[in-house]
Length: 204
Image (cartoon, rainbow, N blue to C red):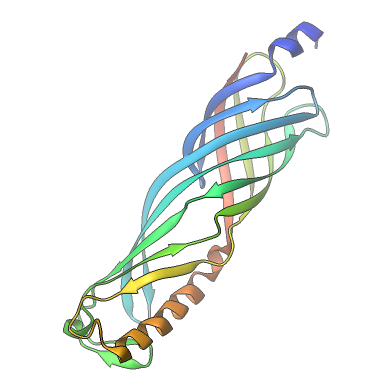
């Protein structure tokens, strides 16, 4: 590769999409072995989850941005990347029991519970490690992909509340706290978030 081509082909811009969401990406590769990427991801996904016989509608809102330091050990497209993200991902939970349910250690009627709602959050900063392919220093359109893990911490639920007849009762509030802990146990698997992204970019 000529020095002129390398000089002209250090910057690229594009779009990335996958389990981190969909968003823009800017890349700078000063030489064959090192590079840096900055990108953002946004996406809304709905998923149902059952905890203690209560069906919750989960609305996952992916919203994060971050940077990755890329190492190209062979000087080509294969890369090993480390970095981190400012993480605003959250899950909005909503549940509406239609039969008697057990919350905490107590059985309640649908009228006593009403509608349940709360928000699941994770750590604000999340480190990441990936393996991928990002194209070479040649000009033009390139296709890339990466796979890895995002360490986003143990999910926690905030402000789980009911709207029923016993919403403000002390016993119900104590049982709601137990329900929060059980929901968090169900979400333990989300401490490690899989990264699977594809990217299309133009290098100039």
